[in-house]
Length: 230
Image 1 (cartoon, rainbow, N blue to C red):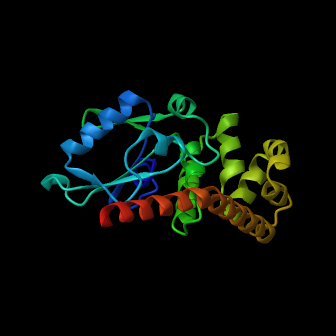
Image 2: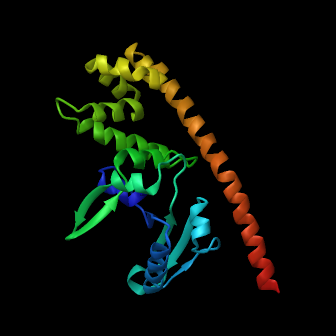
């Protein structure tokens, strides 16, 4: 669900981390714990790998020490901000084969949604991911392909071109995104302005979402330090 998935979708990103979304049931958590032992991976700071933390939306961070993967960081989550439940995300997943092994990834729309964070590095990646889908668009696209592009493109000139080429579809999606309405008018500048407003709103929503989780992590850190001092 992170940088490695972006590579598979054609938006190359150099990533030293592996980001995983898991179903946080007892069996999965125990299997994951055994895998971390196999990789000689220890948790970084807090929280520890427990269902209660995954269920509340925390990320659990590991650092591998086994020689062939030494230094690899693995981040594990079971919930995404404003995301659907794991079962729905799993039903929409994409599957790629790597050296004979099937790898399950977030669908492209779900990956783009997951990337809408307060981190500066994620927004250029969103743009590249959706541009890749734009340039792969067939001559007679399906409605769901057009829906994804009209609602997620972050390249003003491309959104204007798409609205010019598929005007009827653009009109149907305009009520759901102000930038599409501006694209129908052919104004690249006002489309860019709408993109900036969208990004600011998503960044603030992400800050609000993580604020109580960060406070809880601080409490966990203080409790851990206090316990070690005793």
